[in-house]
Amino acid sequence: MRYHNLKIHIMKTKFIFSASILIVCSFLIFISCKKQTTDNVKLNGIYIVPLSGSSATETKILVYSTTPYKYVLGTAISSALATSTNVTLAVDNDLVAKYNEAQKTTYEIMPAGSYSLEATSLTIPKDSIASNSTNLVIKADLLKTDVSYLLPVKVETVSSNDVNLNSAIATKYYIVRTPTPVIVNLSDGKPSSLSKGFQENASKGNDGNTSGEWGDGSVCETGAGNEEFWQVDLEAVSPRIDNIKIWNRTDCCDDRTINFYVFVSDVPFTGTSVASSLAQPGVASFYTDGKAGTPTEILPNVSGRYIRLQNTGTTSLTLAELTAIGIKP
Image (cartoon, rainbow, N blue to C red; front, top):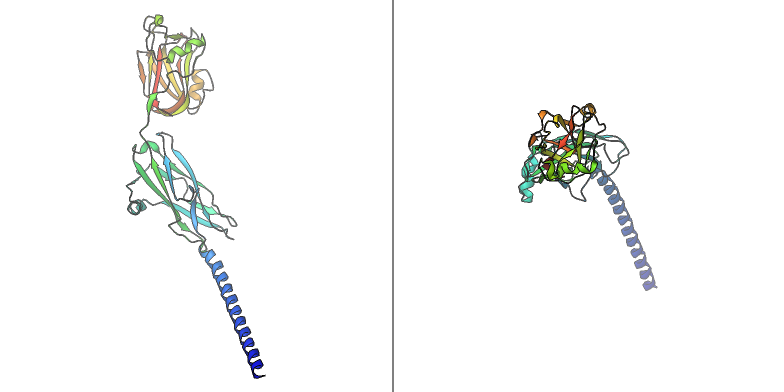
């Protein structure tokens, strides 16, 4: 009997001990869950989007251009909040030296005026994780070629205390580089046309032969008419056309291509008259008073795909060759 009572006592003790362990574990789980919920709010980090994979570093290889590059960016948080959050962005060049030291790199700071943020104040609406966007603007023509620059863009301030501003994840590094451009003859062999006349002869104006002798078979002509022209499609927009040369006919009739314009455009010309090209937005114009030479040289320094050589009078337009030298697209 004494043994039986002892056995019952031991069983009761084990039950009480097990129950106590269960209660303690349940309490610890509750505390852990509560802490995790609290930590999730505190760890609601903010970062700059779009992300390049999982990296906060993004490389931009630019082709030289007088037209600024624009890259869309914004901010995002891990979890939506019940109130709107105001965010400010800034470029912090002090981070370049720190980055170089940490990563053993030698990136340079981008020159003043070569970059900007179109807007520095963004808003993440309530119940949303993403802000409105802005543009990072980079002017490639103000950068040295073959130099690697580092541009740190960071979240500077956040209005909500429920968002953790951690610079380790709230900074994005843009690595920017403009390689030495490839300079080529852009016009040689590209599709060309005349305002009138034998269209098959238009290609003589950009066949690589500058001879002005009619008998050499490399001179094209429109015939007399009002504001006659020759034009070429470079088939892609060159970021910069440096040099255009025009070779006139030399065996006779060098007074036909006279008092003329050279028009350069990124998009097709919308009209056929001199006035229409002068009025068309985005068209660069270059006027020569007098006869075309051998050659006449023009220095556009503009981007372009379409080039038109056009008389202003009623004489026939003759052309031995037009070359456009610039950056290969």
